Length: 394
Ligand code: F6P
Image (cartoon, rainbow, N blue to C red; front, side, top):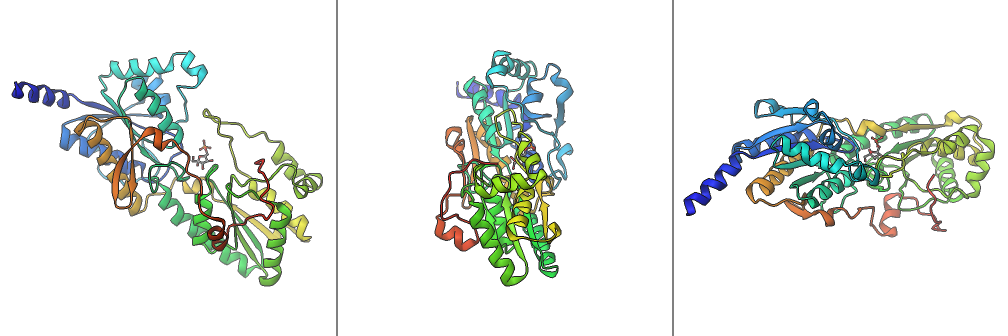
């Protein structure tokens, strides 16, 4: 009896075919995860892996075969330190009301069954993990690893890609700061991060920024300009690191004044930010607005006295540092062990101190914004308005 059970178990494991996906924004370390998952699954469980390009868009595709990338031991040799993701990506949301009504979730499950896939393992940010949790709820096993330069998902100390983004971003911001000092300029470095200020906070601190703005602390422009003016007068230069999601009230009097004076700011604010499939507004351009605001408020003769650098996607396509390769490898092992070794799905893997643990999706889906006290944030250089204005993001 026991032998029969073991045989069935063995056979079921031996026929295990796993689909790998990488959804949402790319980042360093994703390929290390893929390589590790394949190696662990092949070596430990005799599993077979197939990459599906473009994440949930690929899974839902009418012609899924076009999106398949066979992944075996040989194919993943040396993959660890490659940038971005070999499986490309998408922000396709199969569970949006219109896509659910169009039958995309059923199309995904039918595709997976047709291919003999018994589980989906992948990397994602909050939105892709949400889709994986909904596929799980439909009865299809999924296990995910958190990745994003935003570092804005709960249940893990750090997301894949964040450490490499900080390291490179800090070097880049330090470089612009050194140049601004030599040319007696104001430098504004913009970084992404959506509604979380982790990127701006850590890049700002590591690059010695004079002032950092984050979405979690809305900005009163009059106070910000006074602060910058004071630094600029005292030192002859000033370095700012600003998060793309920095909140400025549309009714801020200084913004309203700038809108009257600057065609560029008017044009930027009139560009209605399109939203992605999960309703996230496309951000970016805050440094251009602040450049005009500061020039006007500080009465600078030439706009060249203020220079902006938007690090944007340079932080996404980096080759991973060792930290992110190691984290990706550890996440890949744990994700595959959970699904194939323990038969458990519906979890995100996350790191907690020195450990890598599984976290239920519902925990993972709580956003993780900067939750430090004002006292520490101010000491780190974060600009905090005395008025604590309510934010209507740009
Ligand atoms: O989620 C990662 C991220 O880089 C955010 O910081 C940024 O706002 C967003 O992706 C940009 O999205 P996209 O790559 O779709 O333009």
